[in-house]
Length: 80
Image 1 (tube, rainbow, N blue to C red):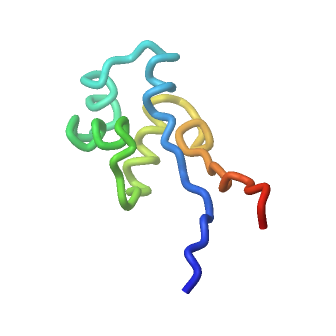
Image 2: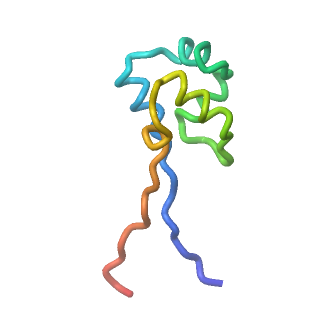
């Protein structure tokens, strides 16, 4: 089986909270999300995203899903 690079999903939550100058504690309160869960999203240490959490984050930050998640395509290889 060939190992194919499909790219990955980047979580840009850390950038967003810095831009909005909001603390993790305040975001946790507004989004009714545990701080430990937010920290996992901030580190990008999430294997399966929770749509309910993403919805609450979008609501609390007044943003779109695309502001939090971004598809990063695979790097283009010069030798094929």
